[in-house]
Length: 366
Image (spheres, rainbow, N blue to C red):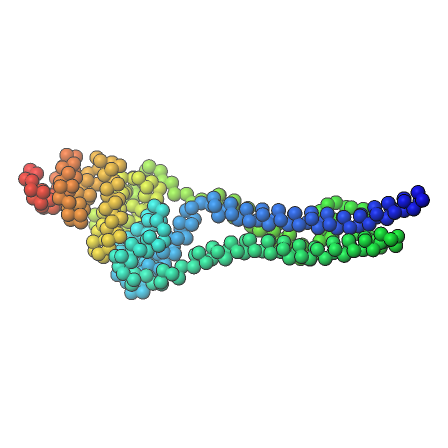
């Protein structure tokens, strides 16, 4: 009797052994694959979430410049044109993007000024959302799809081993598995040896996704473009840009002023001159968007540095000629005259100043 009971216990122990080990191995591999998939998705997501916004801004700026037509050209994009109007539009797009405006908001402002002809392609052709959606589907679909496929394949050998164990409960000898009886060389080697081709492919894909996500994250953190300028470099660029603007080289002047504003968005001289040139381009092309952007920059310059005479002068002229605000213009002109500007400059703008005083029903300044 005791011998029969012992034989039954040994048979049950043997029956449990071969069936439980494949199940535990299957669960372990599924857990590892799930962790690989989650790490892959997390690494890509972290990169997309914390990668430098300047890279994304540059891509948006390049896209918008490629679909916006140069106002004075025929079927040439703003990105490829080399006219003052085209560069003014590029400056407007760049600054609007850096201020946080969306693509749709920028396009709407340009459409309101120029009409549908300002776009080389319809706005709806922007495939950015579709590409982003496809990327998310791929990142999620590859590891998760492989995991689901593996789970379906893993159920068959587990069920077969359980069936074999139950059939041997009556005392029949169980077939021995050389793989299970061999000494374990290590967890990794055992897992690789027992994994199917599909499991290895899914695991490899998960590792590659993790490495690519980590590489993209490291590249995004280390490849941040440097836009800093020393005070001497800023002073040199401002001086050169003002000389270029004085002789009518608006495109080159805008390039220098814009580079200063990228390094220091609150530089009052660059704001005043850049705003003035944008305002000039807006009046020439009848662009409300450029005009509004220029006026906003001139107003910001006066707010940041009330003692900059060109800021006062430019903003006063714009208030009188563009906004038809004579009283506001007179306030700016009074502040300008109080700064003891050069007589040659005042002589050039005196007709405009006198006209603003007359519109405000005030005697002109002496």
